[in-house]
Amino acid sequence: MIINGNLNLPGDKSISHRAVMLASLAKGKSEIRNLSSAKDVASTISCLANCGIQFNNGPGGLFVNGGMLKDPDVSLDCGNSGTTMRLLIGLLSGQGINATLIGDESLSSRPMKRVINPLKKMGVDISSNNYKSPIEIRKSQLKGINYESPIASAQIKSCILFAGIGAIGSTTYTEPNISRNHSEIMLNNIGVTINSDNMRTAISFSEDFKPLNFTIPSDPSTASFFIAAAILIPDSRLILNRILLNKTRTGFIKAIKRMGCKIEYLDNWIENGEKIGNIKVSHQKLKAITIGSNEIPSIIDELPILAIMATQAKGITTVTGAKELRVKESDRISTICNNLARMGANIRELPDGFIIEGPTKLHGASIETCDDHRIAMTFQIASLISSGNIQLDNDSCASISFPEFYSTLKSILQ
Image (cartoon, rainbow, N blue to C red; front, side, top):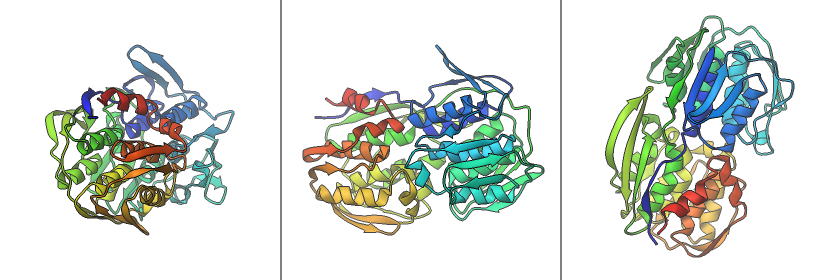
């Protein structure tokens, strides 16, 4: 068995969320191509449709008729998507929309205090179930604030910036480490007055937004699973086209380069402010590395699959500063460690990460996904290098971010 192929993957999930949200503000028709097929993005579209935005699928992509946000007649169901809930709270608050946002059991257990408190400081009339959903926002007069976030989070940053679009005066957001900056790039593209300087971003009241017209680059977080498979399986080679190479999203590539992987850049270019490129990867022997808190924001989504790679690396791999993994769709630190231990990995759980000594031979086991899409995909890749069978208790949860995951993997297995 080897990995061999040439992949064109669905659009980046983070950019897809933001694209449909900001297109909803623009007066006129936006055209968005290669939108993510994730259920999470479908949740965002459904919420905005309930706020009066018209979406139409055409041969060229998704067409969005924006500029007509209104109070929804029903609660906005964000499903499993924390990005949907946190960003929409800011966006709708800034546009004076009255709404109640709800989510599934997993989302309803995730922390929202991190966005509720700064929004309250901006003047948003907001109530919640002990800082969790359901969350109700009521039309308010917002004022700009200077906010210093205690954690690096693109979701918190985007929420505050989106609210700042409709706030009187200037809103400034400062973060301790640089998080993904797709919101800033896209806000600039639609004509918002925004200035970013290292870890500080300032935004001013804006209106009359320009429609979007672009093709979303392929999701590097989704690509990481297939990259890992090609690197782990001898004689494998894989080309991935139009991959997003934004420097705030290349932490995984930088980390595996340090592990001894060679990434061949076939070409790259800038499109709508985002760096995009075609890359080639092949099987490599791996060595252990150390990942600290300053790297975590750019690799947070890829840490589960990196843990699988670490089990095959020579030496001791240490990941720290990743406490944010405990409040994702599952407690990913615990889930990674427990499942890998079942497979025979030499792994130790830390409060904010894990330590893995390799290489070790993995064996089959029953895997608890905790209904977490990235855990399901991670251990499906682990099954390719393990002896014995892997049984996922819920393989269908992969559709939350990538419904075509299993068929895509099958297409490159030979």
